[in-house]
Image 1 (cartoon, rainbow, N blue to C red):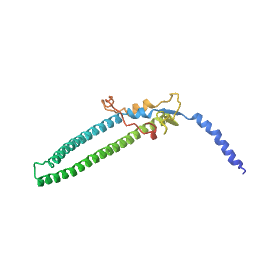
Image 2 (cartoon, helix red, strand yellow):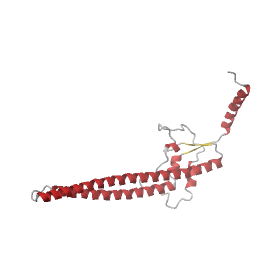
Image 3 (cartoon, one colour):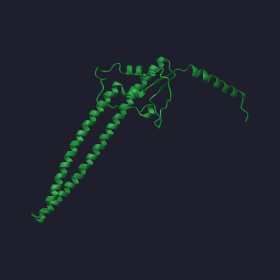
Image 4 (spheres, rainbow, N blue to C red):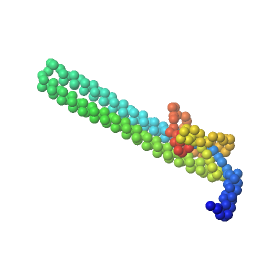
Length: 212
């Protein structure tokens, strides 16, 4: 098949233009994981989630203690149902009461399991919403700073592939926007918001957004 001369000319023009565009493009880098983890709102949201999780754990412990007490009461009632010192009628009565207790125990256990599932789901959803909202704020500042600096592309040096390998294999370290983006995000932070929290591990952005 013969290729029209006009198409060949257009293709040649594109090949000539691309190198010149690459030479004029300005590239920047950013460590989005560092920015996200050290954003004061991330630290605050993470502390709030941990506090809520601790409250739920306390509530669950109370339920488990009550369940253990109910188990002990059931065992005692079951033992009393086998007491030869009482009449058979009384033993039957106690056995029926023990069976009722066993039904209640199973319901109690099911309620605890449901509470645990619901607590995990609720915390997980809140964490995802928090992450998405804060990551969106991070991206807006990156976009603003990139436009102001005249950058054509900005790459996340913390990004990893599906195989947990770095996506950006080499960079010189030049045009790093990490510190200036983080500084802008934390510009209006409360006085005590940037203090390091003990055992703090913020919920970092997922790999699909360029960081763990």
